[in-house]
Amino acid sequence: MSADDVSKYMDKLKISDSDFYRKGTRASKMGLPNSTTDKSQRATQDQVLDPRTRMILFRMLNKGVFDDIKGCISTGKEANVYRALIEEPEQQLAVKVYKTAILAFKDRERYVVGEHRFRFGYSKSNPRKMVKLWAEKETRNLKRIFKTDIPVPKPLHLNKHVLVMEFLGTSEGYPSPKLKDAIIDPQKYPQLYNQLLAYMRIMYQECRLVHSDLSEYNILYHEEKLWIIDVSQSVEHDHPMSLEFLRMDIKNVNDYFRKRDVEVFGERQIFMFITE
Ligand code: ATP
Ligand code: MN
Image 1 (tube, rainbow, N blue to C red):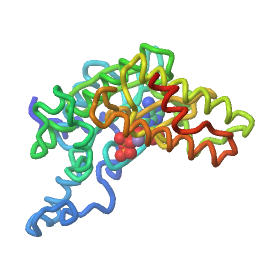
Image 2 (cartoon, rainbow, N blue to C red):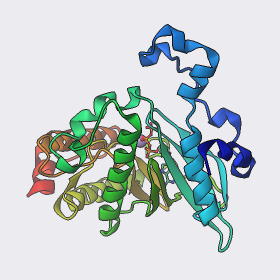
Image 3 (cartoon, helix red, strand yellow):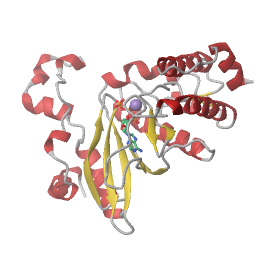
């Protein structure tokens, strides 16, 4: 089946048109010449679910990876996340679709240096290859973290730049909040803080990874626990910048919990705790 045939099946995918387009993005902002700013071109450029992505989702649907795609959980710079359903037995999934927009990956390069596998074949001029690599990297990292006691969504399925994983949310389909938005009993903060530091240590010691974008934006509050997400840019502990990234992660975590009146540990002390 060709990518063009896919549109015929689009009604099976039940995603509203508004979810296909990123709002407010202009071709000119993306460094494209003006001649490409006509409507049809822009639509193609901005379309999140380009024919290839639709094809992948359609194949997943056919293979029974899921039976239906519901609404969009999140539209961001680098990825859109959708909620999908398996009917029998009922199960919810999160489908993360990486975007091929060039801008989103402009400053991601530094995460790739020093990682042979991902540097090799990493081509700035081929966004499709690039998003595939990020999705692979996120899957690999999730698998590694999932083996430990750290709560992360279980990776279930990967195809090109589309990653299917466990959905974190209620049985009614509401996604669990980011830590920054979660309503938490203030008394619980010190324990959550300590727990998070333990996760960071396990991630370093056992998974040999540094998250590298850890903050209240990439932690979900689910079933009264902190769940780590968005590990596509996580680096190996021997990456040349890993300790620099670790310091930033520690700072973000400390800043967040300090604002919640937790008596935080010194950053140096935490650094030792994680790496020693
Ligand atoms: P963005 O460009 O939006 O920052 P991103 O690369 O940061 O994309 P993620 O952080 O992995 O993508 O996911 C974006 C949002 O989607 C999360 O903040 C969270 O709200 C939601 N989300 C991601 N994974 C799941 C999941 N497994 N279950 C429920 N919600 C999820
Ligand atoms: Mn994120």
